[in-house]
Image 1 (tube, rainbow, N blue to C red):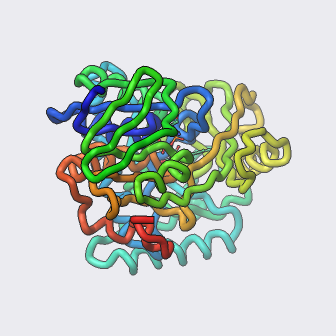
Image 2 (cartoon, rainbow, N blue to C red):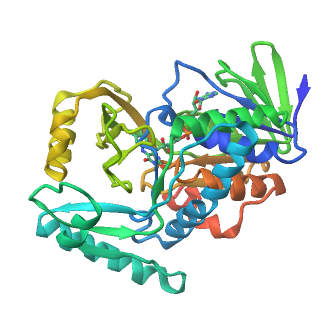
Length: 371
Ligand SMILES: Cc1cc2nc3c(=O)[nH]c(=O)nc-3n(C[C@H](O)[C@H](O)[C@H](O)COP(=O)(O)OP(=O)(O)OC[C@H]3O[C@@H](n4cnc5c(N)ncnc54)[C@H](O)[C@@H]3O)c2cc1C
């Protein structure tokens, strides 16, 4: 039996961020990943490092998201220095476009609520009217009435991020086990055993970061992870000259010049098919925002499943029944990568989650962490 200090189950953005964070210490870390048959949000997302709409009515989530966005520049620089992979992180601020006066009024009310809820932590935002916006973004459609802006938002290449986290983890001595679907586990406080095809591995700590797989795995460890799939579809245009200086909630230009359009939200179970009506809606809204997009060819489109907790906020817990077993679940794994590497991994390594994360326990759904 191979013995590790910690086993991470799930090699998507959440698991690999936490595993990379561990691997920077002297811990011996195993990262187990299901492989190509899995649902993997980390390979099908939009790539925003997004803050401005996170945490209306839940200021603790706004704090966590902002802290993560603040960790991002250092993380991106560290990953590039260590692995040679540029993850394309930029933080020029971001805007949410409003089409028509009703959307603009609703957005302003939400942003003002979030400012009030932030208290001393502050929430720096501006509403831009159409004229101010036109100075920043070229070729606005006639129905664009304005936008909200914050300096906190940015974007990155999520595939490069995933690659860099895996490469950095391996270079730090972490052991990656691909194509290992965890089904059989032995859980006892401080002694977790996982059956793999080649034998058993064990560790005093385990982190469940298997995305949608967490829902089934968690009860084995006395945890609860009531995550469900929420489908999103994305379109990508051919490369264009650089015209968008900052990301927009549903339109962003990559470093390479492609323009990504997204991103829908459909409760469709585990169905990952693409649907023409949704694709049309995405394209229509994008063209209403920027009519010149009509001249660009769509070169790719896909759908992927978000890992969605019931209230949209992350779930972090340590098992009360089996201390040493932790779970991490979220629908913003790109945005939260900074926090997962630099803040969450050290907490788990120390053996306790920061009480600031208590409101993000699954207990808020009326389930015990020791389900
Ligand atoms: C369309 C779309 C757009 C998005 N846009 C953004 C965005 O702009 N910004 C942002 O921050 N987030 C965005 N997200 C969300 C982000 O992609 C997810 O939060 C993130 O990828 C979740 O990562 P994860 O590691 O938890 O899950 P996943 O990527 O699903 O990975 C889970 C991993 O666990 C493994 N696994 C599952 N079960 C088992 C098992 N039993 N044993 C071993 N391994 C297992 C799988 O192989 C997989 O690799 C978007 C998601 C979608 C779908």
